Length: 312
Image (cartoon, rainbow, N blue to C red; front, side, top):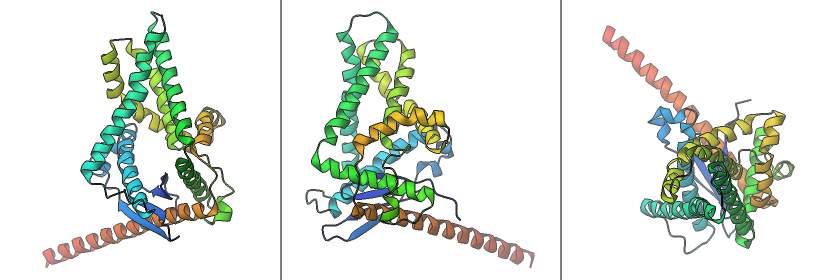
């Protein structure tokens, strides 16, 4: 049996995106009922700059690339699902959307929490940082709960559950059919929801060592240190996803429990879409491996021919 790929995914509008090491496959069920799949290369910066394959640095890169790929997959899914207003986004549109999203995130999870410390009276920097972290967690939970109540989002969360179940089934080595996939949990330790919770927790510990400077200094320091927090959190979530240790599992439980808000039980038609996405992602990855091996063989043969010709 071939080695299992490290696969991640994301729910999109009426579909699922599955990501392998080098390819991304986004499967969407069109209004006609047909499942269409879009495959894109990742073209990761890690191939050009190997430092981004190293622990910590790979988490920073993964966060940025996931945001870009996720937005592109969402755009494709909206088009295929019949959203007329979803015109094709240009790179400029994607950049603007990401900047707006980042500004909104800074407002919700940095500005409001750090400014809220004015509501308490204490001179302890430790208490201030703990309060800031607590408020950030509350805002995060309220945000997740709020969007989970929207009817359209609940359907996306069903596809999120389908994504998790399908990856579980693939990792367990069972046949990828709805009957088998439905038996697995809709919660997964490598989920982005768990990652975000770990980011919140890591930030509390890290920011506790920064003292308590002015409001703007706090905001700037939190933003600048976000890649560091993301890098550490990525390694933790990666370790938790692979570890079978009971203590590690217990520590991961809050992130898994939070997924009860961001996932819903999918129906079989949603499982079919997730399975299609995963199968295509695996197929293109395996094809890419074969092509690479063939290219290597051809290159070696060409080199031997050159040596023979040079000898003659």
